Image (cartoon, rainbow, N blue to C red; front, side):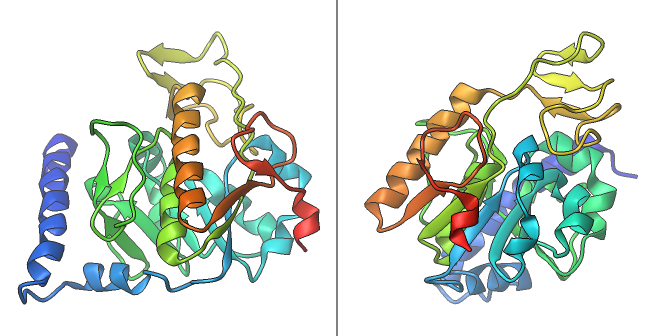
Length: 267
């Protein structure tokens, strides 16, 4: 059996290969199923508003069932809310390696929502009819960057929400509403294990909508709010300059980069 380290190396080069495929396609090379599916999403929802569902505790303060029938992007552990929501998000994303590894069994079982997954996570997030892989660039100079060529490459921004904003633009939406973005994290409990930037939880999660989100046994990266905020400013500037807007419809929280709007007023 190929070990995880080798699988990661294979995925890294697969990501570069897929990026080159788009360039060669202009010279006549036929695209594969994954590339065709990805290209089919470009401006597929032009003119539609989109709700990006983050995972803060404030999600418990709103009626998520109001979003049924809306264009939605969920991420990470949002599947813990599927039953209460009464619907699946239109798109599901994950880009954090620890979340992908620890939750791969559940993520691989998700059906009837389009999963947008970085190529370098192929070693744990398996291909299926609902999964589309992207060329996700984790290390680059000039952080942060926002792509207008999602089919070619997508930039990391310290939070999966930044990926979701790039996806929203690619889908054609210029009216984006962010919910559950509390932008506020309590320090790990004393009994949680910390190894550099990786924290292994031994206590209930207080920073997300469910205590099992990063509950005992699950790993997560130390959230760096300042870095996230730089990415959010970049996303705001990009939308502002390209005829769009991102609004913060979160109840409470500390994110003030985007103009505030009351969630209930949108329905």
